[in-house]
Length: 258
Length: 338
Image (cartoon, rainbow over all chains, first blue to last red; front, side, top):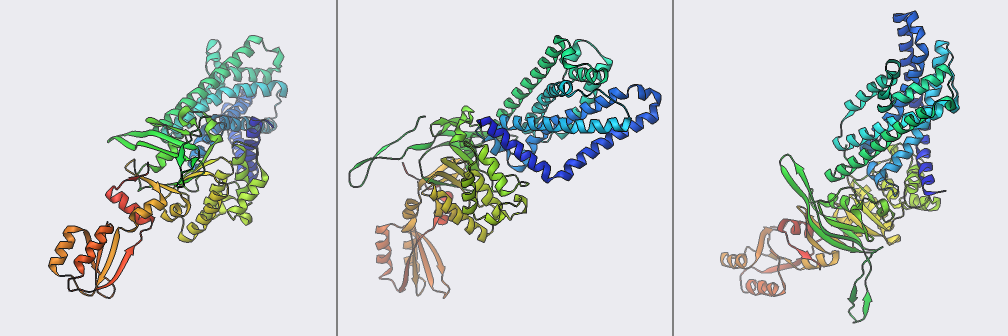
């Protein structure tokens, strides 16, 4: 096994053990997400009536994306502070792979896990609403993963800021609400803005794939390039900012503080 | 990889090559900006540690021990000065140094409390510099005496066991150099003694280079070949444990008299030496003559002999490391072994 294969195996094994050992917590997370959706669905039906029905497919896709994005973002943003609280952050920093690589391995695990959770919830949402969507895994999964990379970039920035400034939970929470706006943006706006802000461009493509049945290879190449560039830039900038903020934290001597 | 070695001459005149220097600091300094101004936590600290030696760092709270260790581990960036481990510059921000060094910081806060002992060892072994070695993991579990608790979450263990697990997780990385920051922090006497025994075994078995900081003098005295004493961010003593004890061993002479010395004798003694007066449990007068050398020893006897009180008991007080530490810190005595 290669060195990085060993790192991924170590992180995947640890995360899987924790998910299994605390299965009730994992299950409650799913239930809470579903209850949240049910409240949106039944509340929306009651308030908006037939008008809500016409936007239901987009709502389901949006909620699916929101769950996946929140899970990916919070994992990166929170994990650093959790590790600092447990006293393990400095141990991860002292890994021969470096802190960034260990966190990246955890992020990969989490993207897979949160994508899985989102798909399970999507199934439950479709059962609840009685709707059907095109869930072509070959299209939706890659689009989802690439879209989430931009959110993970933001997660790295927040993680770095929380290392340097410590208690910044309020900013963390606030950004989650910004995601709702970014996911909904393609339904109210078009043009270059969608290619500049994170999450929105991918959200538009995933919505098209799921509500109109557009396959991955049917998207114009330019759109795929914009999505890759958008997510790549956010991820690279986010990671670079995290790296810089870790260095600043080393200057302050507060790497293990929380 | 750059390492240093020195040529020394042994007592019998033969030339021999000393061990390689594996830890080297030069003018290591760290200052922090605070609301009340700049605080210098570590001030111009330089030392070298040879391969296979066990060095203790002692000092009161705020002496700069942990900051020094964290700078050596690359966790805190120095304001100035350099540090290298096995020839690799620590501040190069390269994770290469973690092939050579691992560290346990602040007692038990180094492991995942929701994972078992064995799971922690497996995880930390694999993020270290070589694949998990099941034999080494089992051997470490046995060495720290956690065989029966190996499959229990760390959270369910006593504090002493948590710290043993934490030490094992540091050692499982199998680095040639290990830093232990306060390994017995917060333990009761019994757990501390038990952990000290485990540490002695672990440290000596693999002949690693170890830097250990502790408030527990017995840990340092038991484990270490050499002691660095820090106060206010500076090194105020750096010598072997043996030399430090030796240099203080004949300095305090306790004389028990059958009566209080006459005022004129007392005046002479007090003017010539640092003398503490007291009484023993049988209410006999006691003089403790501090910092006395061989000549002074005879001078005291010459002064007391013609006087009235009879000398009934003479003791040379042998200090332990705690006495040495307190004197060095209180009086700022320096005994730097160049």
